[in-house]
Each structure stands twice: as structure tokens, then as C-alpha cells.
Image (cartoon, rainbow over all chains, first blue to last red; front, side, top):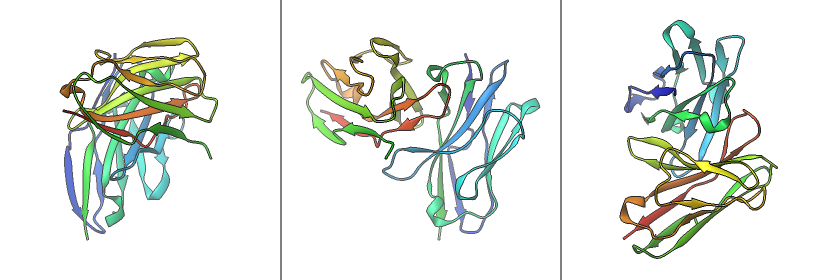
Length: 115
Length: 111
């Protein structure tokens, strides 16, 4: 079974700072990768996804992530964060040939952006 | 509008009093799932359903039941709730291997 590690539990940044949230997974085969965001009091929303092709994936709200297969990583980045980016961020992985049942989430990273 | 609807959004109840959290999706998704979210643990899958009348245990099924009599509905049942089931619960649905759509969550407090 696969697993997902998000090593940063809580990240605090000032507005306009650059963001990088780490995500590493363990699985021997090909994977689908996702980043979800959960704004305070809201449900999870998809930020971006990687299925195949270009390993640099662009998502909504200026976020992007890079899949580095050799490092089993899918880090989330944003050049300049805003106060409204304060949220919890979840990385998730699923075997490419697997069903939705096999989607595994990381423990989440709480991002606080100070105005 | 495509959505997953959960009810209630908040519930405070007492140990042992049976409760049901409803979940309905309007996207004709075959796959539905329940998660609980606890601080530091992320989302853990409770039960899932691949289609009508097809359900199976996830990673933390103890103390929960589900049913899938219709494609759109996937209720979560706590027959005898206990305080360790105090949590934030999310229902989700998807089609094939596509990303999940999540409901707004149900915050349960069991005293």
C-alpha cells in the first residue's frame, strides 16, 4: 500500500513570501497525484492534479506543483502568497491503475499567511 | 450545480444515541466514500462504495455502518456513538479515477 508524507505540519509566512510545501510518497508503480486545499470551515477543493505528461502542473489560484519521479516527490509552490491562502493543504496519491478507494491522503500542512 | 450535500453540518449528541449523517450527490458518480478528519491525522477512509449495493470497509470502519440503496445517497450510520467518534466527517464522490468532490463536512461532538 502507498503512503504519503507531508513533513511541514504548520507553515507561517508573510504576504508576498514564496511558498513550497513538501509531499513525498512511497509506492513502486506509477501514480496519480493531487493537492487539495481546505479553507477554514470549508470542504476540500482540488488545487491541481498530475496524471501523466509534463511533470510541472499548474493549478488554480497561481499554485503549481512539480512531480519528481526520482525523488517520489510532488511539492506545491506559489511564488507570492496572499492572506487568503491561509488554509490547510493536503497531498494525496493513488496508483494510476487503482480505483478511488486507493486514494491516500497526507496528514496535511496548515499554512498561515500574516498580513 | 454539481455538489455533494451532507446533513447535518453540526451535531452534538450523547453516547449511545443512534445517529445518521446523510450524503447525497447529483453527479451520477458511481464511487462514494466517507472520511473522518482528525488533527494531525489527515483524512482517513471509513467506508466506501463502488456502486449501488456494493460497499466495503476503509481504514477505520469500527463503529460505523453504511448503505447504498440508491446511486445518489450514501448515509453514514453510528449505531451507538462513543466519544472517540467525535470528529469532522466528509462525504466524497467521484467518477472513475477522477478527483474527488467533497461535501461541506459534518462536525460531530459525542458527549
